[in-house]
Amino acid sequence: MDNTTSIRRNTWSKLSSLIAADVAIDLGTANTLVYVKGIGVVLNEPSVVAIDADTDQILAVGTQAKQMYGKTSRAVRCIRPMRDGVIADFRVTSEMIKYMLGTVKKRWSLVRPRAIIGVPSDITQVEKRAVLDAALSAGMRQVFLIEESMAAAVGSGLPVEQPIGSMVVDIGGGTTEISIVSLGGTMYTHAIRIAGDELDEAIQRYIRQRCGLEISIFEAERAKMTVGSLLRHAPMLTMTVYGRDVTSGMPRALEITNETIRAAFHEPLCSIVGAIYTALENVSPEVAQDILNNGVHLTGGGALLRGLAEKLSEKTGIRFVRDSDPLTCVVRGVGRIIDNLDHMKKLCMDQLAA
Image 1 (tube, one colour):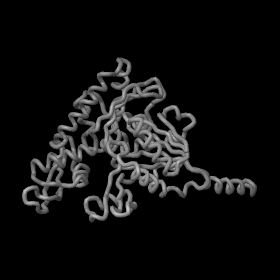
Image 2 (tube, one colour):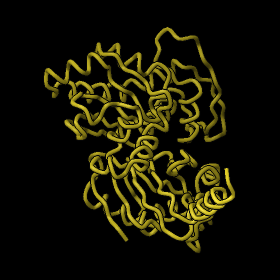
Image 3 (cartoon, one colour):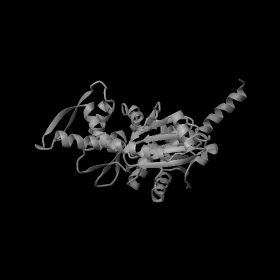
């Protein structure tokens, strides 16, 4: 390599560091993930914000705020600004996005980046505008929205632009989306507000009603992740949960098993299966053949539940295939689109520029 070529490459490297690095965002109820173009997933943080109750200033975001949840004084409030996959608190969500993008902001300097954000398919026009405005106020120069189900299909490597019907069940924190995509569009989509949060609440209700113990939502989430299983003949798994005795009001520990979790999940699981049945009843014979041949693709953090794919296969008689990394599937799909925006822009829903 001659000196001229070396100088050119070094100059281009320096200039590249000043040019905007477009970002992809999975703005989830439970977690927010950020993908930087050409790099990959650079951030995965809980969608939780801690606020000073007196000054209304942001004290902590993400993991640090989640650790404070339920343990703060009256001077601090911990908020989950996303609910059912959409913005419940615009100002706090905007601040959360600003903070999270600030952790990767060193990747751009002279030019503000573009962003694509995954949103639920049933999002309203008002909710769309709230997401777009939040991202613009966080420093984006142009924002695109894409349905999470389409992003999940792209992230799973499905042939979304070919004449092949692909079915995706994306179980996030706030919503479960059942979608069928083909030829770059959505043939069928339906979202139900039963997903990871509802599963956690089901554990809370079951342990309170059957065991007389009040546990926190994050303790329920820990139980789901540690011993949660839908396999009927799985080896026995046990763990200890901690909470407050409903009768005495005193702190108490309780040992639970995977059978406890399986029993707690009966009702929400029936709702998810019912929504899947409804989707399958609305497909054409040609698409039904594609789904039988290729299976249903399971994505989202809820897909990590042990035995879920097997249980859904048993209930429907159709093969369910879990993505290799279901938690990051949506953001990887949005990332693939931001990497190839000129070609794949048509997959997006709405856009807004500063």
